[in-house]
Amino acid sequence: MDLTNSIEFSSGEGKSLLITGHDDKKVRVWDYDRGVCIARLEGHKDWVYSVFFHPHLPYIFSASDSGEVRVWRQSNYELVSSFPLGVQRLWSMAPCKDSNKLVLGADGQFQVLEVNIRENRIPSQELIQNKEKKVEELESEVVRIKLELTRKKEEEVEELRLKHKEELDEVRADHREKERTQANWVKQLEDEVRALKSNNTSMTERLAMAERRNQELESEMKFKFKKELDEVTEDLREKERMQANRAKQLEDEVKTLKAWSRVMTQRLGKAMQANRAKQLEDEVRALKSKNTSMAERLAMAERRNQELESEMEFKFKKELDEVTEDLREKERMQANRAKQLEDEVKTLKTWSKVMAQRLAKAKDRNAELKSERAELVEKVQHLHSEVKNLIVQKAAVLQNL
Image 1 (cartoon, one colour):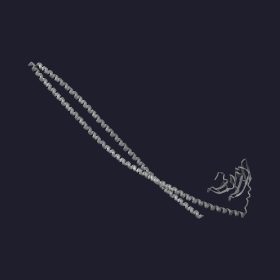
Image 2 (image 1 turned 180 degrees about the vertical axis):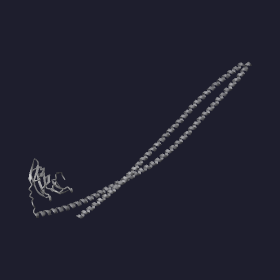
Image 3 (image 1 turned 90 degrees about the vertical axis):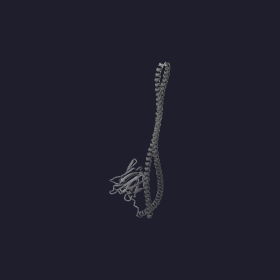
Image 4 (image 1 turned 135 degrees about the horizontal axis):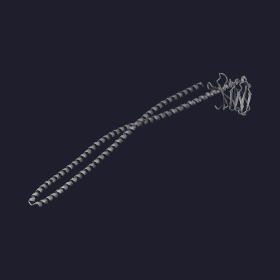
């Protein structure tokens, strides 16, 4: 339906009628309570700009852009009369409430007309023949419409059947593909979870082995360090004993020399008495020289003892530092390895959580796919019902024909 140019309500009591004029050169009468078009008046050769129900005459008036005014009977919507006004652009038309006059407005002018309609009566026989002819035409049109409707129904049913069949096949294939993909994904996730659990167990065992090895290394290093420390301590004690024995030996020699010196002094006294003073002095000088030499040797022995103590202390300290540094390095390595193993365990735990989340998502997705499958099955059943209804309607139409 084209553009609506005019619209008017019926002034009759108890009538829910509405009339409209359109660009498609037609006039339509509507029942606005039911929302249906009850009549379509045709015959204008140009756009219809003005239509109305006459307020006190049983007629409908319509005016078109070509300047033609048509009068229709309200009872059966048949054309009663038409007359051209010889104007262009007949924009509007209005009735007078107190008379049969009409006021029409066109480009640059308006007209006032007196309505005096003389209906052309058609002879009764001719009217009957026209009615019969019209009935035959209507029956032929009804048959043609029924046949056309039947053909269209068959085409629509076949098209719907093919379309629904194709859609159903596509949906089934898509659902099967989704099920295969989902099953493969779930299987892959389960394999990954099993592999992670196995790897986690292996890493736990490796961590336990590393801890046991760490304890063994600590015990071994403690034992080795204690053994080396005992060896060094025993060596130092042995050297101390040797130095003590040497010092005692030197002290004994010094005591012997001192006793010898006293004896020689006594002998010198006696020699002086026996005229051996010179000889004794020589012996005393020799003894003093020997005593000096022994004192120097004792001093050298003490210095050597100090040097050996310093050297042993330095060597012991150096060896102790090396052992301590070695132990610290091994402790750092073990700490780093333990930290690395802890990081690997944390990573495995995180990955296990991620795998658990992915598995939960996969289960949720599987549930969603099952729900979608149920919806698709329901939709397919609904489509089957529609196809059956269409087949029943087709059978009813064919039976009516």
